[in-house]
Amino acid sequence: MSINLILIAIGLMMIFEGIPYFCFPDQVKRLAQKLPQLENSVVRVIGLAAMLMGLGIVYLGKVVIGND
Image 1 (cartoon, rainbow, N blue to C red):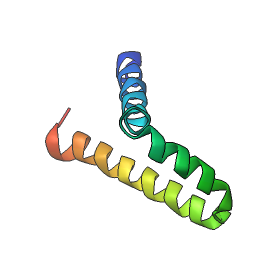
Image 2: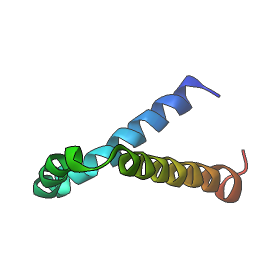
Image 3: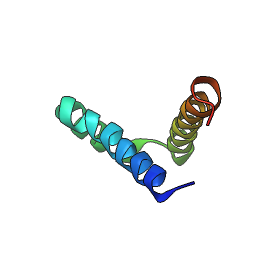
Image 4: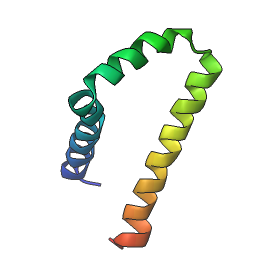
């Protein structure tokens, strides 16, 4: 794995992380205010779901779409 690929992955992650802040700033602020009220287990499930979706996207990109 090259450093170029790692930098591309980090750059793409930052782009996707920034989209909600750019497109829906009011909703992001409301979510940030409600987040402390959620149970830790709910936040963990949300985080796990996001990680599994990311893993699925990486899998699709690596195995299904492009065979490097």
